[in-house]
Amino acid sequence: MSLPANVGDAGPLGLLGGTFDPIHLGHLRLAEEAREALGLEKVRLIPAGQPPHRGKPGSTAEDRLAMARLAAAGNPALEVDDSEVREPRPSYTVPTLERLRAEVGPQRPLVLILGADAFAGLPGWHRWEALFELAHIAVANRPGHSPHERRWPATLSPELDEACRGRLNRAPVKLDTPAGKVIPFDMTPLAISASLVRDLLHAGASARYLLPDSVLDYIGLHHLYR
Ligand SMILES: Nc1ncnc2c1ncn2[C@@H]1O[C@H](COP(=O)(O)OP(=O)(O)OP(=O)(O)O)[C@@H](O)[C@H]1O
Ligand SMILES: O=C(O)c1ccc[n+]([C@@H]2O[C@H](COP(=O)([O-])O)[C@@H](O)[C@H]2O)c1
Image 1 (spheres, rainbow, N blue to C red):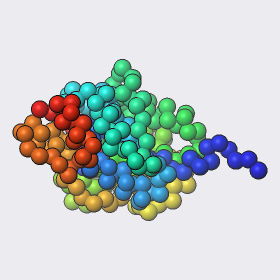
Image 2 (cartoon, helix red, strand yellow):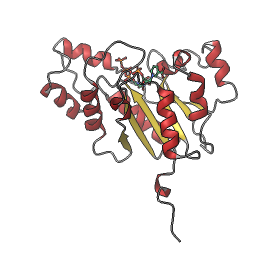
Image 3 (cartoon, rainbow, N blue to C red):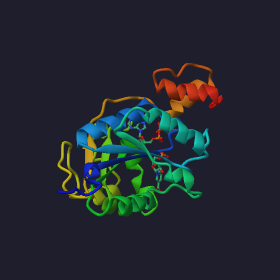
Image 4 (cartoon, protein in one colour):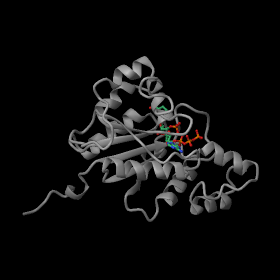
């Protein structure tokens, strides 16, 4: 009996978008712990070409993509998607998810992975309510923004609270539908941010052990964040 070509790749696919300016161990643990907590087949890192809700990043999209590739190297569970970097327009997530949904078909579960800070900002995103139709949304705690610290979901804005109604499922959860659940999960709290890394480098201080050595070497070689 022959199997469909994509049978080995039909498990839930995690999607982690970010400015990744630069990618750091908070991002990589977020991907790894989401993969374990939700039983994801793979996690796709999607560097934003033109992040919509912030100023111009400190490094180019090509450098941020190259650093994401270095960070993912050697981990077969991680993929890097360059589609947002190649598009000459703001990197809105809904069109990216629409393209991915067309790529993987209507059945494969897609899981958008967000830190609690990004999740809280969802109502400001372009066509944000469509996100819930296109993917599940997994939300990790983040120091300073933790759902638990803030008694989440009690403190969500009314519109986000309304959008989450009937969708909340605590991990572990069976992803038996392609989209639609909101899944808070616990990750090792890591108070690492790209701003912290940039600030340290700008000040001439060490950022070692906050990001992969390969990424730090790339930063040094290309004189980034001076
Ligand atoms: N330490 C962390 N713990 C949990 N989630 C994180 C962590 N760092 C980043 N994330 C999440 O990763 C995604 C991409 O984040 P982003 O690339 O903006 O990094 P950042 O560290 O928040 O950057 P910056 O400091 O420049 O704002 C977001 O969903 C964010 O919430
Ligand atoms: O779609 C939007 O309107 C939107 C608004 C803000 C952020 N995003 C996406 O959210 C991810 C994290 O963004 P940021 O700015 O926190 O790095 C990244 O993939 C962005 O493209 C998306």
